[in-house]
Length: 238
Image 1 (cartoon, rainbow, N blue to C red):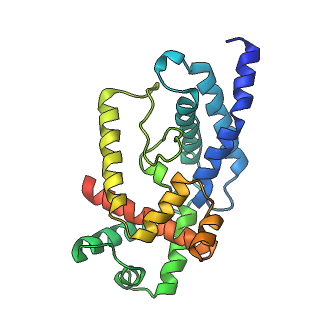
Image 2 (image 1 turned 90 degrees about the horizontal axis):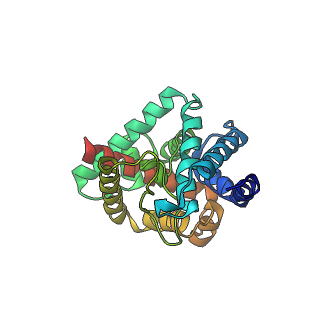
């Protein structure tokens, strides 16, 4: 393509960069500069424009999303923006939740998780808020860079791109299948929130309005859900 077409394609998909930065930013602490993430996303968009070949058999948006998110995640990995102690605490909570669920044979309640952690329910909710702001707690990141979703898709197929290979794709597909299985076993409210957020693209505030709870409570439930998923996946894959 010529330079004019290239520039037009970049401008046309600026909103995609904003969208992906917004999705990644759900649980980032306030001090993380969103402009830096946006800049990384723009780098990814330019790379996608320059590397895309129609013969790949996927839409440009699908390919570009994987590349853009890869650049955003690489930018985050290069920053020490969360205390190691809090990251360690998040892993401990995930392990406790997974062990508790395995022991009682069903997803534990908030009160049961708090008791297992030897804290009261209010301390548990405060901990969820801290974990939410210290980890990139999104369903999409449990599988790495996800392609742009068509409406109604929760776990789309990975596009054929520069870093794909048969073994990698097989492993990713198996992981997605495992995530889908774990999601199906979540409590109805948690599953409902995931569907509203990842399938309907509603904001946390909009979800709170639907459920009759505060935005912060939705964020807590989302963080707890992702923690539960991480714990289950770690247990299944260990």
